[in-house]
Length: 153
Image (cartoon, rainbow, N blue to C red; front, side):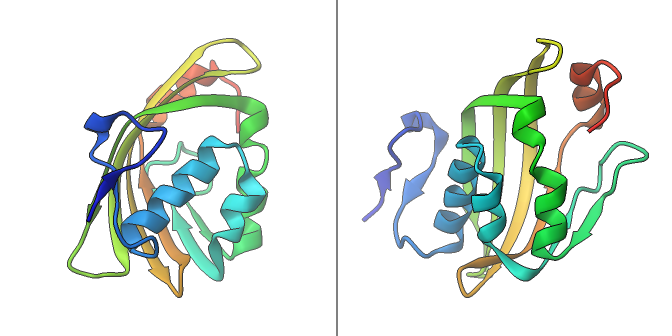
């Protein structure tokens, strides 16, 4: 039986079934991100995780190998951008029981300049033994750069 996930509007399509499914593990990773727990998020990853951000702005890394490298990249994110909510979220299981895809958005603000931060993402995540082994996220770098008003991350 599937039930709506607490904390998300009923129209998001997020449902809980088997708490160890790829879709549920992906949901947990987004909850950890929303809680601004970058150490906790990195701990959801395998030591040999590969994270890819194919649309990263020019001059920014687009690939990270290893949990600690990814954590070092993400740890300052909550000091720059205050993500307040995930207003839309749809998680899709795939034919591969270890992979799930999410379409999601965030709203928040840039702490250093007060600009709104509203971003949409498409994220593909593969798990092994309950940990993220591949994370690939697509987002609009122009929205990111405009929100930062020339600052770098």
